[in-house]
Every structure is written in structure tokens, then in C-alpha cells.
Image (cartoon, rainbow, N blue to C red):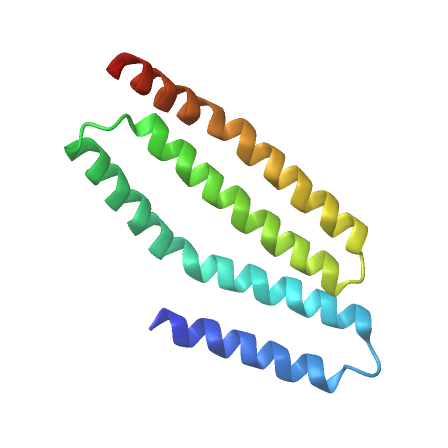
Length: 127
């Protein structure tokens, strides 16, 4: 199971971080970044399956795949911004973390504009 691998990586990283807690704070940030990258690499294959499933459903429901792509990009931006912000907070760079969060929110809003326009056009066509 994939979740067992992920939890194992997290616990091993946590154990190593606890060992070096007093002496090497820089090492803890590097360990967190490395563990996060490993977890993301493990998750890539299930993500491909989810994307293929959503694409199939969109095709069957006659939904434009552009909108599915936009939603997936929005989710990716949200996860990447959250992960990066958490890493910055762990490294005591709170202002950088706040800037990442704000940038992610703005990018999500920009990507959501075509979806909002499609919804508004649909509402206007009904009226």
C-alpha cells in the first residue's frame, strides 16, 4: 500500500529530525524537503490514475476538458503553495510563506476566471 510507504518515510524523517533537533536546525529543513519530494514522487502514479478517470468522466458527460484541466491546475497550485508555505514556516521564514500563500491565491483566482465566465454565460442563456 502506498500510504504505508508515505507514513514510513514521514516517521523515519521525524525520527531523524528528533535526533538532530538540538544540533542541526538546517538539517531538519533539508530532511523535510527531501521527505516531501520523496512523498510527491510516490504519489505521481495515483495522480495519473485520477487525472485519467476525470478525463474519462468529462468525455462521457460532454464536459469541455479545458475546464477539467483548469480545475486540476487549481488543485496543483493549492497543494504546491501549501506545501511550500509549510516548508518556509518550518525554516522560520514566515514572511516568505505568506508571500507564497498570497501568490497561490492570486494564481488560483486568475485560473478560475474562465470557469466563472462559463457559469455566468450559462446563467445568462437561461434567462
